[in-house]
Length: 315
Image (cartoon, rainbow, N blue to C red; front, top):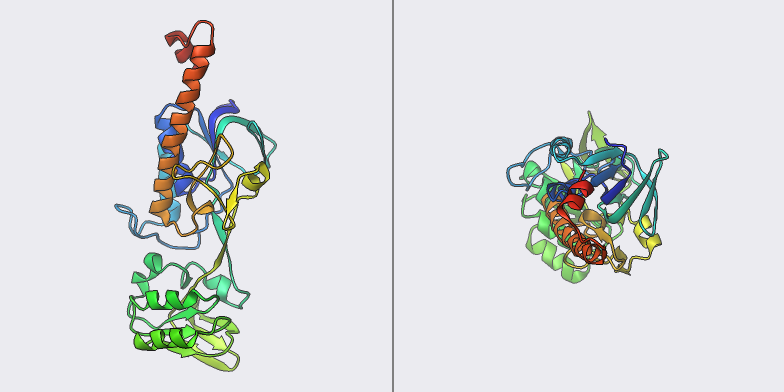
């Protein structure tokens, strides 16, 4: 890492979106730092899926490869947490370092707010999951369950049915309507009434769901969780929020000039490959914004932006 604490862009968050954004910006010969606290959402998962050429790769291996690629382009990797983001932009880190940037790109992701059920957190990311596109194939044709936590959980159950003929919908806190019961029944999805009290595990694996004294064997449990974006700094900076998510345009720009966001922090449904693509797209728009500013500065300078000045700026 260089001692330079002044950058063209500071990317906050070192997941797929942040690393891919930094890759694009590094290749654009920008001075870039990636600040990451090392707590990815998908850390409990053994493998990631649906990423062309990387299907089945452990998530931490993708990040390792990405960080190695960035080092080849001179991107600084800062293992730390941002404690504040000030207009201008000044970023203060938990370790005491202060960074300044012309632009910032937040790719800090989300965390899942899980129901308070014994055994659920221990199963999370392995055999208690949310995304059937990410995990469904690995538990295909096995006894599956869907926990009712909200009205949309019925749709979740109907989707999970694509991967197994043996699906149980646990009504829990979201009993289905009569119309929904008809739909579930038509697809052969059994409804189990009552409140789930625990997720049972044996030898490190989920074996089923407890409803008081009742036990329903299942090999995996799907849950629609409430996702909580890590966007406090963006909100404090005044970024507009829509539907409880920081609003961005198609290029990832927020309502605050100079501030971009990409990946799960603004799109909780984005899988790894989608988050990576969003990071790349945001980086392209961001770099063009910097180019526009560079041109304006060159015009305003007395001698213009000479080749010698350009070389000096890129050192």
